[in-house]
Amino acid sequence: MYSPSDAQYLLVRCEDERTESLAEEDYWAEAAEYADSVGVDVINSSLGYHDFDDASTSHRYAEQDGQTALISRTASMLADKGIVCVNSAGNDGMGTWKRINFPADAKDIITVGSVNPQGVNAPFSAVGPTADGRIKPDVMAPGTNIVSSYSSYYLEHHPSAWDIVNSDKEHFDFEGRTYAWNYNSGTSMSTPAAAGAIALWLQACPTLTPDQVRELIAATSRRHDPSLDYPNNYYGYGEIDVYAGLLRLLGFTAIPDVSQRQAQGVAIRPVGDGVELRFDSAPSHTFVVNVYGVDGRRVVSHRLAPEGCSYHISLAGAPRGVYAVQVNTGSRATTGSQLIRH
Image 1 (cartoon, one colour):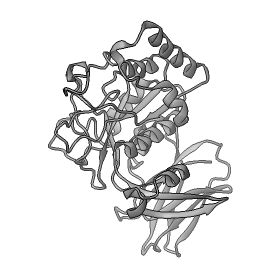
Image 2 (cartoon, helix red, strand yellow):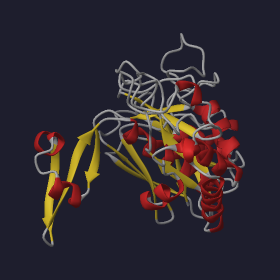
Image 3 (tube, rainbow, N blue to C red):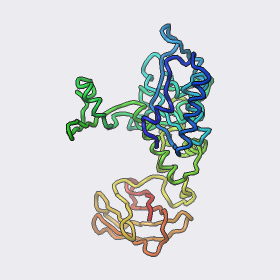
Image 4 (cartoon, one colour):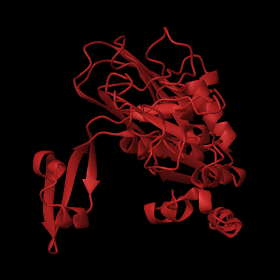
């Protein structure tokens, strides 16, 4: 992942893109080359320019074609280097202007909108299409009332800001500075979640290209409203599902006995020579635990009697690698799978 300062180095809007020279465009092409040279894989960006068709601005909606604005062209360059650029859609959904911003219109990037906890499009989340008719956003992620850290410098310079005064969740003082966490809503909250999911996919498959990331999003995103056709200009391909993406990348979707959802109410983690299962509430009847390798082979199968909340499944003798642990309790809540590294 690239740091915010590095991302701003790569994606910065000049005051008037119409007057930019070829030399400036070469500068941004060189910036993309630099990012590639230092091994950048994912850039998370919440940059956005959203004043259109107004006497006070030189920008027009017709320019939102993914290439007229320099900031959008720059973002598109990154995909040519194998870098996934993830950018927020913008927060104009409730205004008179409801469309996405620059560089959310860029080609070959992942534009992210926000959903609420029920998976419904947040009212503030900007929508598509682009001026040239492409569907945007590409995908959604949670962006309502997300707990986020605040810079101590922001706290010092904006002590009476509404968010600091009214929505402070937690804070502490350390070496003369105050550090705080607040509730925030916006596509700037959902975009890091999507970028983090993509970073996990790249850990599982480092050769994944930006086009393959988009294909994975299209194949695995959750679609809460089945009455809609996907992709569409409100939800893109749906809400990003990091776990479903990992299962698909690692080949576990080819194993019919492995659930596409994680079990709730039970923590599953590698411990020593095996796996520990710790239930929030003790199972009331016998349940089954199966462990599968990436080759589809079932390496462990146990039928366990209810004996409290904690259980240990031995993987002694199994080769090191990634496994899917499938728990079947008969209850939908606690039935599901979990990936572990043994």
